[in-house]
Amino acid sequence: MASSRPEGEGKAASAWRPLRTPLFRNLLLADVVSDVGTFMQTVGAAWLMVSLRAGPMYVALTQTASALAFFVFALPAGAIGDIVDRRKLILFTETWMATVAIVITVVTFGGAMTPWLLLSLTFALSAGDAIESPTWRAVLPELVGKQDLAAASALNGIEFNFARAVGPALAGIVIAAAGVGTAFAINVLSFAGVIAVVARWKRPVPHRTTPPETVTGAIVAAVRYVRYSPSLRRVMFRAGATMFFASALLALLPSVAHRVSASPIGYGILLGCFGAGAVLGAVVMPAARARWSTEVVASAGVAVLGLMTVAAALVHVMVILAALMLVAGAAWIVFIALVNTLAQVLAPDWVRARVLAVFLLVFQGSLAAGSAFWGTVAAHRSILFALAGAGVGTVLPDSTVDASPWNHWRMPVPPAGGRPALDDGPVLVTAEYVVPEGQAAEFLEAMHEYARVRRRDGAYRWGIFRDIEKADLYIETFLVSSWAEHLRQHDRSTAADRTIEARVFRYATGPSVVRHFVAAETVAHALPPRV
Image 1 (tube, helix red, strand yellow):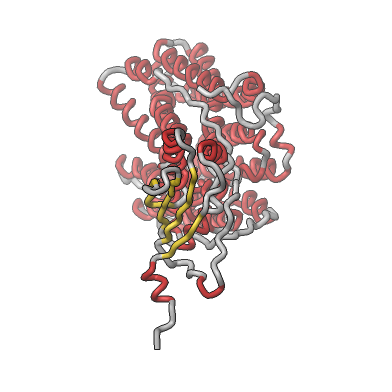
Image 2 (spheres, rainbow, N blue to C red):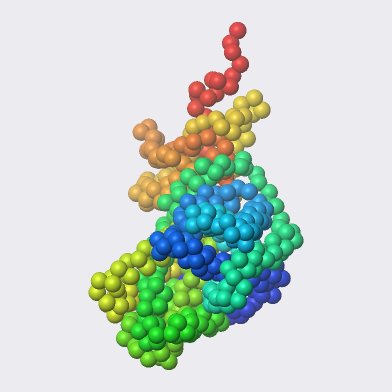
């Protein structure tokens, strides 16, 4: 495994240092209030469904309506987040969710709510969250420096765990005292802080030198980028596998709590300890990352989480269980923070929101599948068997590469009369290489690695050919769907690609000659008719 560390590793950074950035601090505080309101909304919706005597199926469907929105909208939302102004998208979705929350509140106070209307409005509310989530994660590197990304991600995790602990408890008190409509009304007010902070954010508008993408094209580019990015695929696979196992602890925690305490207070205590552990983990993590690599810290966190999961199956004493949850919460936040940081660092800005959308699908899908699987195992075998099996953790690899832009290609400059239209295509690009005798094998091996970069950035066909008359001349060819897509390729290279390209030119002498060709049918259509 590589021993190199990402930028900023090896330097002790305070877990609270991102709070020195006013915008991040204000957004985090506003998000705490907003997430508390969201959890109050979730509890209120479930309670209202029960009050409507809709039956257990409808109660369960309230969770389905929330989760379904992420699977429907996450990937298109990521594409939109990379095309439009991210600040405006966040502002739009927050306003959308506030509007839907107002409708829910008014209908509830008016006594006109029905089970299907509540499900529809819950889906509409979650749709706004699903569309916003990839973009919200993608702007984090804009708010703090790369060195503070892990700490900022950990603080976001702390905020979420705090809201998860406070929101449901507060909802129970409000619903009991003033009714479910009041809980919904508080959720409406909780959006005000985020809307105010985002509205005042003076985000620099990125300057685009290439044609804008369509939503469909952006989705295809996202899938292609992940497919031809081994580092991203490894992180997503490891994150999904780890979440599949780690989900068992929280999914079965109510059953574990009921085993040692018949009161719901016991479950609340264990959740509170888990949240407190998350705070502890965020505080300890920067010092750990200053001493060890990301791989070591993440692997240790996963291993500790696995041990705590197994131990939870064996312990029947509340005090000891609470201590285990404290440690498990710390290990959990270390994993969540580092895996999110890796995904953000590995994705360049032009594709970050949609890559994070794919990551979100993998992450949430593994969480949902793992919870269902381990719940089924516990029902058919035992809680002990399920937790013991889930305690087998996976190790997160050290997959950090430099994804900062590296636009070093010469932009093609066609003559005034021969400039193709943006949608003209396909486009054939050729590049010539002179390879000394005896280095052909090494050169071809490097070129096939380079092919992955070409395909990742837009090529749908690639090849390398040898001139039969000049044994040392090789020509690389690749096809791109349109002239606009080829122009975008010039902005998609990353600094990490420099190493791959350097390896190619280690075996090829002299600069390659690059030529661009547009399909002859397209050119013919563009020419004036002959007289």
